[in-house]
Image (cartoon, rainbow, N blue to C red; front, side, top):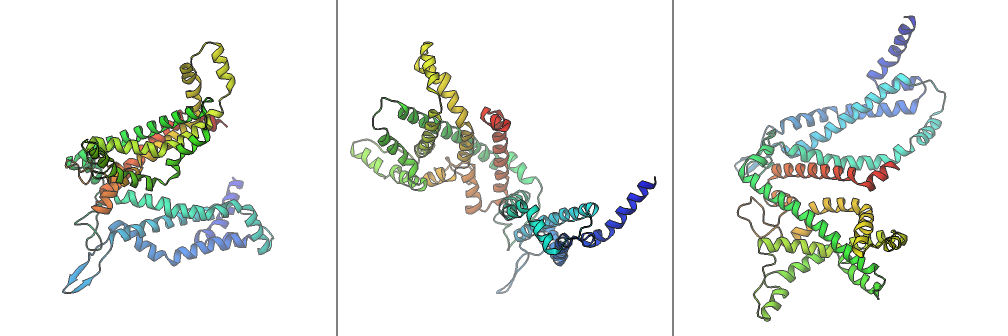
Length: 430
């Protein structure tokens, strides 16, 4: 009982000072540097506490007064989106302060008296926390350029931020809860568009990934054939589509395949009718896939060529002795061992194609027009639809919901696929 009372009294003598003024206990125990750092954090937070509280209040209300006009004079009001961004930033800083405050209290419980000069403490702190100091700039950049945009996107999905009635600064934005999520899946005007585009996006991503890998596989097998001469020349020719920037390749194909482009002009000169490569809904989708395969297959050719060199020749020789055919060798040896090495790349390529904005927009701009869709065309995928919703039509609330759906879908697919892959399990096991 006496030991418990003694412990409680010791803790009581440590905590009150650090609870009120951060770093005080550390100063008292000789840890001037740690105490100074904790104190600076508290001073900085208290200096801007009123601004932080105002920003968090603005995050809750999203503004009270909209922009007004009195004669020829415009009276500025609250900008809801700026208040949202400032509010979420203030909330993050408040959360960081709470965590640092908790670390201060925890450190005050455990700190032991020392007798070191301030210079020695700086050197010791630098040596002990070098990794933390080196990674801190990257962590802050990640917080500002990764976490903050994600949080803003999530919050916008719970507002009515859209044209024409809720675009700041002329109008205010309001919180609407899950109304946008319900609208995307229940309102026909949105659900029909989302279902059609989502289905085509999945088809596009699967076809582009599988066909690109398959074509690259065929090129790699051809180059690995010992009877083929001039492999370096063929390899150079095959790699050219990948060496040329995709932006240039897509624009060139767009010029070649449009209604009055060189391809159709040549067909017309031969007596054939023009082919609607980019204006027919079905042909436009096929064209987008084939052009993507053309531009991306060399990557898989190089990747699979490297994987083929890692397959021991003894396996093929042993299979020949057992009477296996070339097709059996490919099915039982080549294909499994290559897929084992390139499977993670397939998952990443699928995720890339799912959000491959350039491959679709630079070639067709989402067209041809689909009158049954809202703000979208026949070849639009989810990411290009988001582009249309935001930059062209200012439907930010629905675009944010679609972004969240894409994130959740790709996260589930990626985690499920990686957990099932033997190559991923082998890496984890290591």
